[in-house]
Length: 149
Image (cartoon, rainbow, N blue to C red):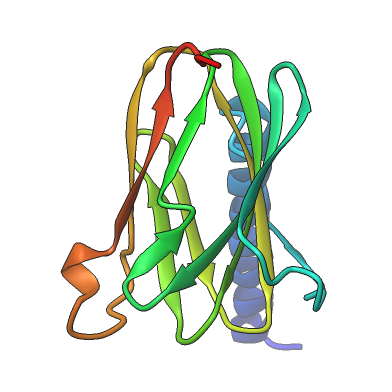
């Protein structure tokens, strides 16, 4: 092995180490949740909000031309929400304002991410992937407020 091959191997190992450190740092130190891709289940064809317990919700979102279904999600402060996301037609983006959530809604696939909402507020959901002529109107929102029955 000559010196150039050794340098290439050391450089590659160093870059892989930096990449691994960056992933571990973001997951453990910054507490950034890594999205999960789960197998598509044919039963996931209906958008809904399920209350698992007092402060834990599951939200099944279907991205369609040019809307998110459900378009408005109302939860109490302190809630943890598991978002399950798929698309009914084309590839869409799913970004929650001020939460660092950035997912792709792909037909035939389901992406999952868990987000905690400790404070009151309104969080916009926008599509960040060009999905057609009405793309700029594709928005939703999460309202973190006291629930009224």
